[in-house]
Length: 317
Image (cartoon, rainbow, N blue to C red):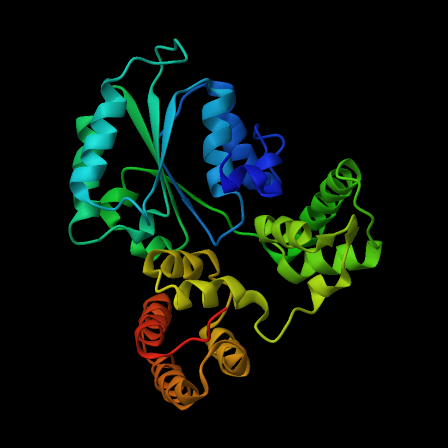
């Protein structure tokens, strides 16, 4: 059994568009696709945890379409993508449907805009007779215009006007999950946790699972430790696991670089050898200064963490 199967966010992932928690205007767009049965090439844009991948899967499930999910942050090479897509496109449909198959390219903004993304434009045309493409991304501006123009673009925007209503729906769903899991909880703690991370619904559920200790939701979910949210990041840095580190940054776009840098600084005594702490301070100060000028904030964070990963000595666990 894979790690993802233990996650409540996977266990309770909505299977239909009706079950997805979305603003009405966005949900109606996808319901029309289900009603007409016509799948288009789609670009789903928005920050992490809003339900982009869930919607892509739900559309395929409701339309009974075979699909393949490719994580672009892990499989980004042109040849790898071409071979996987071609093999999938030429295989026999497991659903028995004569409709299009669907290629879901998750986190497509990870793909190289100078080489891989232009190649994907050709893939769309090459496989247009039997495949449709759904791209998800956190940053639409990192997707080249020729790809955007070949897709119907849906922005997963959640305004303050809609947030309270969506949070109330998610509160109701979480109450049901906690009851099913036989986890006791304080209503105020649950409500505050939802609003702390909303509209990142996946993160809310992950945090609730993490802090549901001994059959009770702990109020520590609202506090955290000195390392706090970056515990997993520190592990990736210690293990020099660049791919996981880069993925963590992409999955936490709501965390400003100043927050990440400050938490690393505050927790340095817990995970670094004493002689490495001054060097950490100098690295953080350098990249904190650069953050005010760089065009790509994510790249600046990854560059900083890469330098930290290679230059510092870590305490043994």
